[in-house]
Image (cartoon, rainbow, N blue to C red):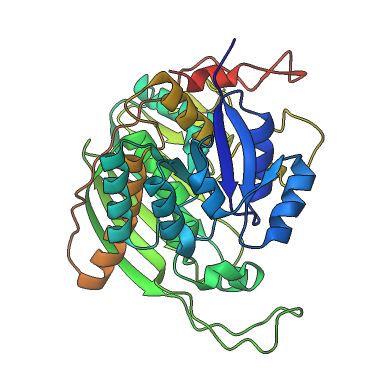
Length: 394
C-alpha cells in the first residue's frame, strides 16, 4: 500500500522520548520521523545516534521548516504552552504528551488557536487507543454488561518519594491526579463519554524532605503543587455515576482499579496506564472470565530486540492515528483537542469543587469513535507483526 507519509519532528528528549522515537520511526507506516530537538543539544545527539534519526534541529528551525508537518511535543508540562503555541502559529499540526498545559485557560486558548488555523491538535494519553481500552469499549457497545449504571476508579502512589527520582514532579502538574490520574480519567471518558457534573474533596501533598541515600542533601524541603489526594463523584451524560480516588500521599504499592457496573454484568478494565491490561467480565450465573482482545496495540514489542523502555508499550499510536486523520481528511483525530480539553476540565473541576465545595459543570464536550476491531499487532502466534495500523485509517 502506497502512502504519503507525514513528515514529523519530536521536541524533547527526556525519559519518555525513547519509546516515542523508536515507535514513530519503526512501528507506523504513516510516519516519517525526520528530526528531533532538545534544549540540551547533547541529549538530542544521543537519541539521534541511538535511534538513527537523520537530523537534529532547533525549535526555530522546526517552526520554519517547510517539509515538517507534524510536531510531537515531549517537553515537560510547564513548557507545553510555549512550544505548542509556537508550532501552531508556524502552521504545524501538534501532538503533545499529557496534558496541553498546567492551566485550563491556556489550554482553552490553544484549542481556539488550532481551530482558527484549521490545524489538528492531539494529546496523550493514547493508551486509550490500545487493545485493553478499545476492547472494553467494544464490550460496552455490544451491551455485554447491559446499561452502564456506575463505576469505581482508584490509583495510589508515593508521589512525594517519586518526586525525588523524577524531579519534574516537584512542579505544576506533578501531583498524582495530573501526572497519573489523567490515564484513568481519559479511559473513563473513552468508555463512557462526556462528564456532566463533578463533585470532589481534596488534600495537598505534605512538605517533603529528601530521604533517598543518593538524594542531593542540599535540597530544601518541597511541596508538590496542587491537590495530591482527590476523592470525587462524576455524573456522566449517559447517567452513569462513578466514584474516583487518587491518593499520592501513600506508599508505592499500587492498588489500581477500574470497574464498570451495568444492569447485566460487571467489567473489570484493568490498568489504564497499560496498552494491553487484561479485561475480566462477570455475568449473572456465569462467573468471571477473561475477555480476549478485539483490537491490536497490546503494548508488546513486535519490532526488534527487547529494550529497557519496552514497558511504555505502544506510545505514539495517538500520533499515528492523527497522521492518518490528516491524510484521510477526517474532521478530527480520536485523541483530539476536544477530548484532551474535556479530560483536563474534569480534573480542573475536581480541584475547583474541592476548593469551593460546589458542584462543577464542565463546559467542553467531545466525541470519540472506537477503532475498527479485528486488526491485531501480531499474527501466527506472535511470530510476525500483524495489521493493527489498518485500524487507525478510518
